[in-house]
Amino acid sequence: MDDDDTTSIHGKCPGILQCGGDGGVLFTFLGSRGSGTPRAVGVQVTGRLSGKTYTVLLQNSSKSEVILTAGAIGTPQLLMLSGIGPRDHLQAKKIKVVADSPDVGKHIVENPSTRVYISSPSPVEVSLIQSVGIDPSGTYFEGLSSPQKSPIVVVTQKVAKPRSSGEIRLLTLNADDNPQVTFNYFKDSVDMQTCVSGANTLEEVLLTSSFSPFITVFQPMPSGGIVAAPNRRNPLLKPTGLARKGNNKVHPEAMDMAASKLKQLKNKEFTIEE
Image 1 (cartoon, rainbow, N blue to C red):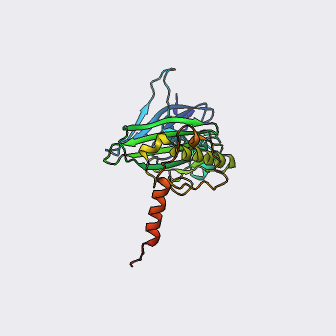
Image 2: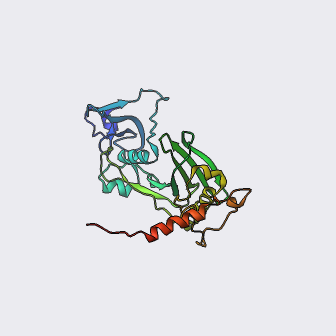
Image 3: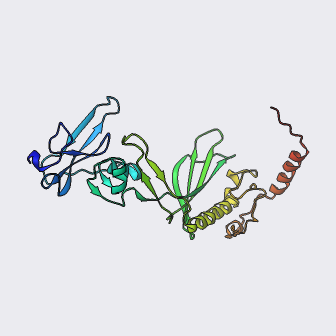
């Protein structure tokens, strides 16, 4: 391919168009004088330790291709740095537009969640994050634990398929800099309803007898209060019945212990020292 057939701003590799800042995908255009269909022909990378920039080109084969996989945030960031993305945003950042793709950087979704940290009085099995259940409202549950003298158990509920979505925008032309990410949590009110329903289910699970060996009566609850005296007056927290199945009941001495503790706190004098 002659130099006249492509646009080049990459001095060491005539015929290749490099867009954006440090790092990205390299393109050539299958047409005359920079027009036509863009084709990815390689990548430009910067060594973490050396700081040197390297250009890696594909072999001249129909089976050669560039596969960009840098995660939900890194992939659209590198695409936009390489000139693929919304035209107005790229031009505002003075990035040469290779392909006007309005959806790049859009529709990013994160799962709203409620997380409860429990200091278990009993030993627990060491576990990485595991999905342990899903309820009819569209929220799923995860659990994990860590090996410590007082094991920490983390129970999380997450909205499985949130309707709210956000976008990613470039802040700089440096691939090492984080882009601006806006998730727009709870922009759709259905996500809030699902999250509240999931928090309600999570709370009722914590109140079951199955959980009693691993939780104290003074454990804070998502809706307020503690295990011994949970705040169930919120009209949004409708009972699911989980805490009433079989012998799933709060410790019988829980209310007495909580009342005694609250009485001690009430009789104690507190002072604030500057």
